[in-house]
Length: 491
Image 1 (cartoon, rainbow, N blue to C red):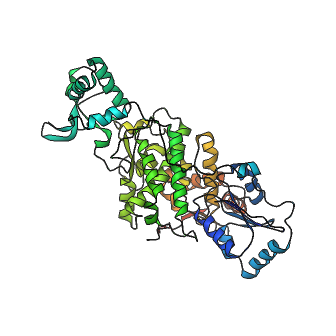
Image 2 (cartoon, rainbow, N blue to C red; image 1 turned 45 degrees about the vertical axis):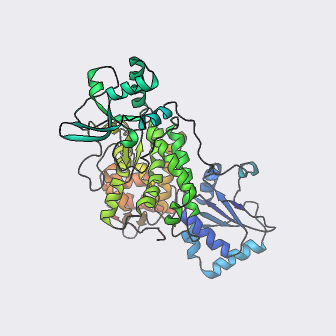
Image 3 (cartoon, rainbow, N blue to C red; image 1 turned 90 degrees about the vertical axis):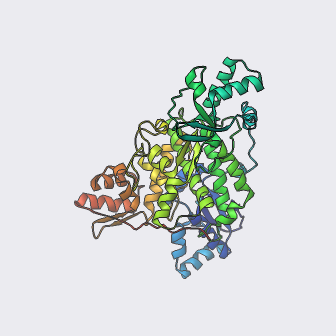
């Protein structure tokens, strides 16, 4: 929630985004000081992003100003000596705000609603009622093909017969309806029973083939088990709604010091139930028509929302085996196909490359999900998937319109953090996050290419100057920092 407290003299200005634990911790510390506080959400007021970078030279949030004095981020605030902190508090309380004080949003933009967390309402799809009737029409049952029994299935002939008898359709209309149910992903062809069905027609192949309602297809997706009855929502719009809703929920259950999340309380929140209802609508979104930019924004937003949903349902993983299982198991049903976290990161966003500890590519040559995969690995996605650094990028949700700029900003923000990149000029050494080791192939494959990539994606700063000096001096040692896997759960 934004705060714009007035003061006859000075103010502390904090630039933040929703869901950023470092921002929450900084604001909690500042409130204890009793200073007038102005909290500006850069995720909402993105028009101030460029000005903030110009003033601070940084891409991370929070950024904190005492009157016109920039002190840096949350880490910088926590490290201030008591005497210096008292001097800054006195400055705000006793001296007027300077003419060049950091900017606040225009009054008109302050009045914009930050979120829309009203209950999701949709336009009911024209086939949704027919599907509900089919569930109770005595058609769905168990069918044997060879030695295998396929539960909750029905044949093409049974569907056509039911549509003719119960809905009064002619054969051609019944087959067209079956094709529509396939195209809209209300039902799917049963896999593994040796059939080949490209569509739904009047031929013997279709009539003998088995089908299931999508919700009855066996898988472990967190948004399965119910019918997505809404008319299909645009993928980019739906991903933004989901990401906004889960971030707001996350923020409301973040501890006052920003250090832990009450996932138990979050899962019991009525807003989470509404989130789950909305996530069901992912089942039938159209993916094949998405552009590269739309795929990037959609799958980054969905990945970050799915991680939180996975924590709520299964708990945060605490060891290597649990982490492996979590990222290979937690999934959503999207556009008629199941996508795990690994599938989204390595299959879609990295152009179907092997992930960490994976022996095979996520998608085989015959996997329908391969059609959704981007043609090449996108290295910038590693800095948009779940920021774990001590400063977050000033971006809340990703949009197709300027996705490349947003991703570059996320990379700059990541590299500004000392838990992601340390340049030691004295030793001629660069210490980088484990992310650069795990996905070295995405950054050029060699230490030389890796360092060049890092240099090209750093914002102008003393750290960048130091790296340029080390590289120009010759041989540079590259090592990798330990990765912090600790959970932020309060339970």
